[in-house]
Length: 276
Image 1 (cartoon, helix red, strand yellow):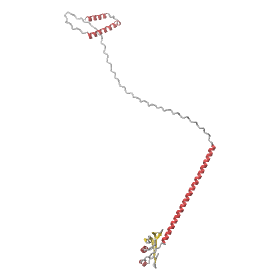
Image 2 (tube, helix red, strand yellow; image 1 turned 60 degrees about the vertical axis):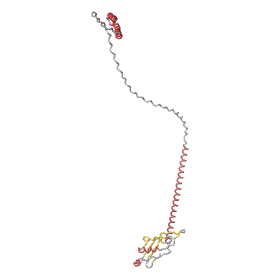
Image 3 (cartoon, one colour; image 1 turned 90 degrees about the vertical axis):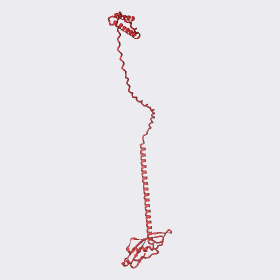
């Protein structure tokens, strides 16, 4: 309690000694406030009051106003700063490395050859010679073409002559064969019977029969030549007579051959029957 009283006395003396001018008492007041704050802090932290004694009836209680320093306003909590996530910056592709092509040395320019002036006379002479060669070649080509045409014409003429000769030979051979066939007469023959009805009707006429003579001289397949029989009544006796003919076999190169197309004409007359 003595320490508190001495502290209060000190404060009262300081208050009485404070001058009325603000500049004079501002600094002591600040020191006093700081001192009071320190003392209050010490009292709050380290000093605990003793239990109060039993009250006395005749004792008086003194009170003294102590000015406490004003509490400082609470410092506002700082607003939390929300860090925004930065957008990703697009990464630009690295440029492709430039490949430097080694410089190719330019070839040295060739020296321009010295061109001599053309010889007009020589050029004209060469042109005349070329024209002369062309004319000569053209004449040779024409002559060769004419010779080839003449040779072809002669070949065609010879071929035509040979063909004509062959045709003449064939015609002569055919004529000779026909003549030989016509002269090919049977060695055994008989006259056909004169039909009685033809006799009673006094019919006359000719009838030609064609047939083939076999290797043995016999007649095969006799038939009337179309349009070569004047009376139909003479057909049957003519075919029967021709079928009985016998010929001498025809020999070619020592061998007997058949002779086709042999013909014989039978003539029917009232007086007598004509034999071939």
